[in-house]
Length: 277
Image 1 (cartoon, rainbow, N blue to C red):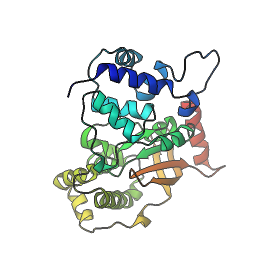
Image 2 (image 1 turned 135 degrees about the vertical axis):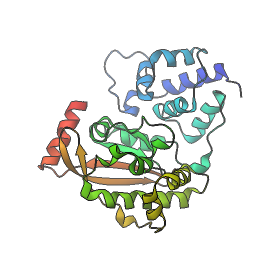
Image 3 (image 1 turned 90 degrees about the vertical axis):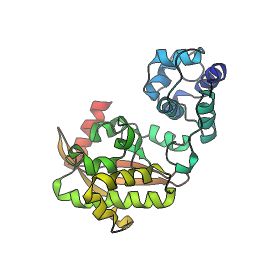
């Protein structure tokens, strides 16, 4: 498919101009003459350079990748139909909606934007983190930087010792069971062509531990405990309450981490928020 450079440039510009700073959790500031968001603001939200976005809006530059288009769709708070339109304009086939797990809807994005000083993140059924607040990155590391099957926290749990190092050893067995149960539920809901199913098949080839747990066919939501312990590389163990909001249409979870006020863990989370601010 060929890129419709004129259509892509116009669509990106119009969607950018239609958003107010407060729509995406940014301060309006003074002396704002540009309608909507500035290019540098969208570029920051999408994790790309302002020059790259400028070239797209000026009908030039390289064809954006799937990953770049997904980032732009989230930054511009596009609906699912608008996201599909963006992909086609850029010369790509629209992502298959059967996976239901690759797009963060605008309503959920607005909630995340308003949690800017709280560790929060959106994950899909495959355990892939789609977006994090800055305090969440400070608490858990940047979980959006991975590619391929490594994007899944479930895959990393069974294959990467660094992932387990963020959890006290006494909690490892429980986390392994919980990750497996969550993935099993996602495969059932999203089907054999989903990314969750791809993760399960790949893990079955490399992790005997995963195979043993998968064979138990456990999908018990009781495994999803609300209190978790996280080992921070600088602050040590932090005990957090993990509140989960489910977005059923897309099969997404919003995870929000808080701590009991007045506790040592609450002080540590406050320190992380202050640093990231």
